[in-house]
Image (tube, rainbow, N blue to C red; front, side, top):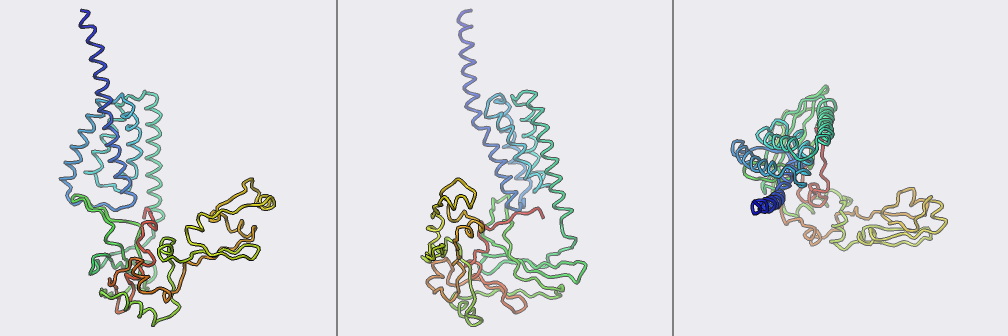
Length: 372
């Protein structure tokens, strides 16, 4: 009897450590949900193989469910149960209707939440919060997609890809209360993510290169491959005053000053982007009183227009420069290939790869996210 009694605590202790070890796998399923939610915000999803993705995701979900039910009283599993439902909300709203992807994750999230080791009072509180979160989220999404959506009918009449495959385009005809309009929209074709069964296409990085009224009956799109030097010559022949606005990183790459700072004393200093963003302004007692602050130093790039005016400091942005200033070597250094895609619409140039790269049309830092 004594031997049996001694074994039981050892066995229970062993099981406790096993559950603790297995619970380390619980957050992995939360990561999958967070991954889907992240992509729902930044990408449009197309399911290329619905049956396969449903089978694979269901199998992964069943395994995750077994693991989390077995370790339901472990801290990591409890925390995962609180993360999954709110984390899934963006995916439910943005990918609404893709049930073969959403249902396995929703079922696991709900079951784990209700059967986790969380106390009943806590479940009631968090459950109420999650219900309100979904209701308010759905309401906001409905308002943006229905009430604030334009009362027009748009039809995509043509799509295609540039010769290099770097860009895709679509021609969209819009019928409205006026005479309608035709738009040609270009997107990057290299920022998508293809996972064989799922295709995620980047959203929020479109460029409208044609916006014509009234609606055009005929829109002829023609792509040409043109050399960098020829494009430079074409632009120069149009005007010597054409400018481009470069980013801080591009100015650093070319070794050009990006900002000109003039102080109240009349002293003028040109700064590289790194120097400008690292520079701090020392405030005198009078300056601190004028700005109504108790701080005696401020980063120059954090000062408002009002603060700069009060301190008598003028900052000129030098990043907009004439294209004629850039040599062919400069353009190569900025990552502009020797040749690339140029689009003609009804015989007129409307898009040049040269300008798109130079002005970073499709840089991820410029991505915009909307509900409509």
